[in-house]
Length: 235
Length: 235
Image (cartoon, rainbow over all chains, first blue to last red; front, side, top):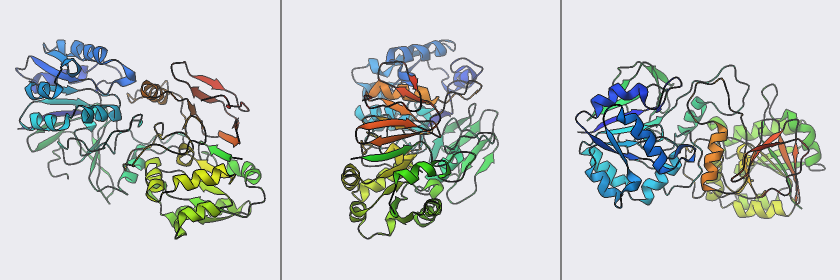
């Protein structure tokens, strides 16, 4: 049975890396002593080693050892053997390019569909959707495809931001961008605010955290759902 | 001789569409009575007809007639015969996909290198750079390539925004995104603030408008340049 925790962000403004998620992660990775970290998204260009160290420091607080996927000769095999998997945030295009380069999409699908617990934050959450066409990231590299893992039958927009009504900036708001997405695509988009996450257990998808999420369905007005809402019917 | 006006935005917060550029456009399109408008970027999903109407209303103020490229049976031929060309903003991925679909990159290069005056705003400016890897837009469609026209030997980041030091949002700042770009790419990026434009005359590239622009060079600290600065050496 699939078990995923799909988080908008790794870090809240007031907190340390993963801090606000640690209680949930204790349960999510219950009885698991070590996990594999996928550091490919490289936020601010941080090295794979340094990024893995950062993840390891956070997981040490709940007594879980973290090993970077980049340290394995055969990363597909490492994914297949993993007890748990965490993909950190950063640049979604860089992450997806690496997953294609190392042919890791099928191994990830296979492991996670078989029940290996997964945590994604930001870019690591984007890849749980059908594709990365609703990422906020800059397309700094060209991946062979935008298609991703499809563990949920919709797209994720992490770090969802409400329009700033005081802004004089003329760039598009997030809502405008997602509406433009629906000129060319029909799947729903879940705008996950920082502090929210989706908890996936098999076919069940629950909104967690303290905030509402904004749901964008094709050819409909967007709407808010409360924390605790199940999104099992959204597709 | 190439003649381009590459603007950060079509519209300032306080103004109407293209208003702040009209004086410059009178000179840029001097003695030209009609231009072709490329409406493919479709901001907010506006139709090609409606978008062309919007551009036509603005250009009517300086007595220039606007015809949408979508109305021609042979758009490549229309580009070749154009007296002037304007590509409006919207979604850069949608624009670039259409340019590839209709095989318009070579006709555009050929016409503009032969001296047909060009105006780009936002997405229409992004395509004047080497590629669209520094667009701010959401990748709502997958173009066959990110490579674009290369009328300037660097990339453009339109709607450049300074980091908001009061923000609690954890998404990346524009500066962080461009620094991530330079982990994987070496060409310079010109961060053009809303109200700025580049005036290209042959090999000469001048920053115009009232604001400074922010220049990001590979492996260097970013720096500001004053309006009136020539960027001819930037590559």
